[in-house]
Amino acid sequence: MRYEKDFLHLQLTEPTVLSLGKFDGLHRGHELLMESVFEKAQTGLKAAVFTFDIPPVRMDSMHQVITTNEEKQKLFLERGVDYLIECPFTEEIMHMEAEQFIEEIVRRLCVKWIVVGTDFHFGHNRRGDYHMLQEYAPVYGYQLRVVQKMQYQGRDISSTYIREALLKGSIEFANELLGYPYFIRGKIIHGNQIGRTIGFPTININPPPQKLLPPYGVYVSRIRLDGKRYGGITNIGKKPTIRGDYPAGAETYIYDFHGDVYEKTARVELLHFERPEMRFAGIGELRAQLEKALAYGRAYLADQ
Picture: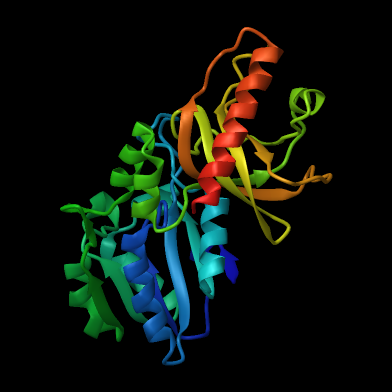
C-alpha cells in the first residue's frame, strides 16, 4: 500500500476508484463502502481511500479517536487498499470551496469512480455532499456510487454509536458494531517490572492521548505479536496500586509466552470486561487478584 499525506503535491497516474470519509474505527458501515471499492477495483482500477487528518480540538471523549492514524493505516493495509491519502486539515484545505475540492481530487488522484456514504460532506463550511458529486460527475468524467448507512438495532452504525458503547464499557457491543475487536496497537515499552517480580511478567503499551480508551479495568484479550496470536489479560488504566504517576496505558499478561519483546509492535484486542480497575492494599492482594483474573480469562477464552 502506498501512503501519502501531501495531497496538494500528489499526482497519481493509475486510474482509481476512490472512497472518501473520516473512517474513524473503520466499522461495519465503512465495510459497505470498501466492498463497493473492491468491486470496482476488479475492473482494473486501483483501490484508493482519502481521509482527513484532523487534530482533536480537545483530548476529551467526544474528540478522541477510536483508531489512531497508525492503526487506521494498518487496517487499510490488511484490507488490500492500494493508496491511502491522509490529508492534513490545513487552512488551505479547510477554506477550499467544494467545487475546487472535486476538481483537485479527480485530477490529482486520477479518479474514475467515487464511492461515498450519504452523510459525507466536504469543502468550506461542509457545503459539498453527494448531490454535488453527482452534479459534477459528467463535468469531470467520473462515476458515482452512494452507499446507504448500515443499521444495527434500529440505529445507523457510526463512530458516535461505537464511542458511546466503549465509554459505557460495553466492549462486546462495540466489537459487534466494529466488525472486529477494538484494539490498541503500539510499541512495547519498559514498565515498572512489578509484574515480573511477582511471577507475572507483562507487556506495556502507552497509546497516544488522542486514543479513546474504554473504562479503566481488566479485560480478557487477544494479542497479535510477531505474526502469532495469544490469549491474555489486559489492564487498562493507571496502575493505582503502584506508587507514582502513570499515564493511562494497556498492561497485558500473555498466556504461555516467554520472550524479550521490548520495542516490538503488538496489537492488543479487548474481548470482554472482567472488572473495574481497583487499588489494592499491597502487592500480595494484587497478586491474588491477578491469579483470579488469569483463571477467569483462561475460562472465557476456552469457551470461544
